[in-house]
Length: 293
Image (cartoon, rainbow, N blue to C red; front, side, top):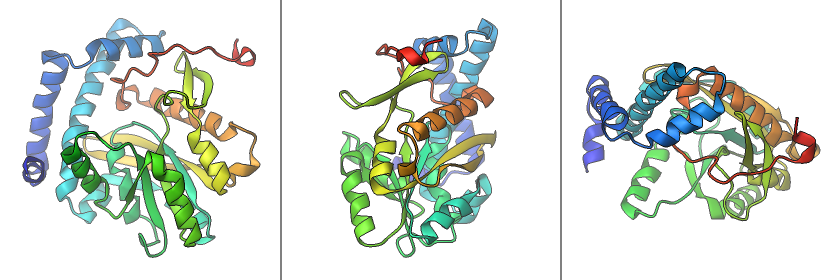
């Protein structure tokens, strides 16, 4: 398989390939260039056109790096991954799970989110013996690609839960008295017909997924935010930030609102490190009257 062979290449070669991919995406085919620039201009109206274009170029560099870094997961040692993707605050998650509490981890499409399942290398709890480490995912239509991504995402002992089966899987873990931490990619637009939390985000009225909080309330989970920062090429730092020790005891949508606030701060700290190529605001939404300024 090409991906398996590419994963064995040295980092320097992979990043040379990434640089070529960057030039193709940014300066060659212009991959979703109009979408990227539109999103950036509308999200940061205070920035000059020069600043917007600089952020877009940096975004394409980071995006290209993410592609080769994700492939590298097929052939990277635990020690090297610990050196390149560091965690701070894992003891917060461990503390809940040692008490028998499961945890919902909110995170987003900040690079490189595919490395986040390496949390198992930092936890004091062993995967599938002391606790389950999971992430929710949407199965891909291409069966071969789906199998490859499942292999990559399970590299460090994490389980991938298909979105439609997430509740059933977490209920089974609770029945077996197995505490869990589950990563929910919560920055996508809600699926058609799903309830949404609408608020101002990056200068846009934005609809956010509410299923994460709804599920966490139903299962009595704690909640945290995984704040990923890019600290250098191929090097990231994830800080675990508590959202609620008991989601069920908070006001409705309070946890989602706090996540949105923290996510916007993450993006404004390093705008080029978020996935701008999605049409996140394709369908207009209207702010509730009490949120309008």
